[in-house]
Amino acid sequence: MAPIQRIRPEGLISSPAFSHVAIVPPGATTIYVGGQNAVDVDGSLVGEGDVAVQSARALENARTALAAAGATLGDVVHWTVLFVDGVDLAAGYGAIVSELASDEPALVTAARVAGLGVPGALVEISAIAAVLP
Image 1: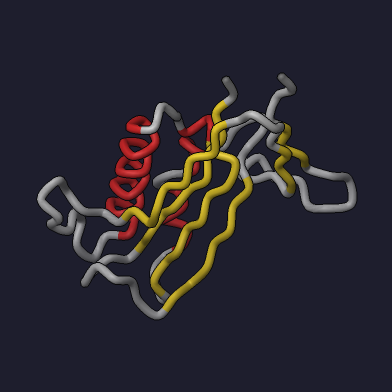
Image 2: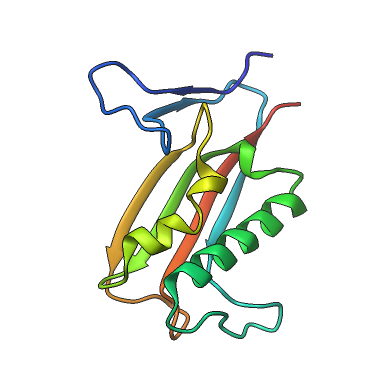
């Protein structure tokens, strides 16, 4: 089976943090991880008011969700990261960039939003992963 391809075409910005295109070959298992916030197993918010702590916990929750489906962070082809408007984006990304950067990074969509479903949440992270047989 062909590998998953992550492409950073010439003519578009080159970044170690994201690719622009992902090609998943037929036969791969696609895994969708819904938005993860910085909550513990009881649903209590972790890191109230601290976007770096919340970003790290939200990513850890995404990692746990991926593992339950037999995937890892390296299998992610697309991340969506939502930050509440007004937070320090450098602090939020700084807490997770080392986990996301690679020679073939996933695609990333990031947005600022007015608020999230979990009261006090400053970040939400979701993912699409693909695992080859």
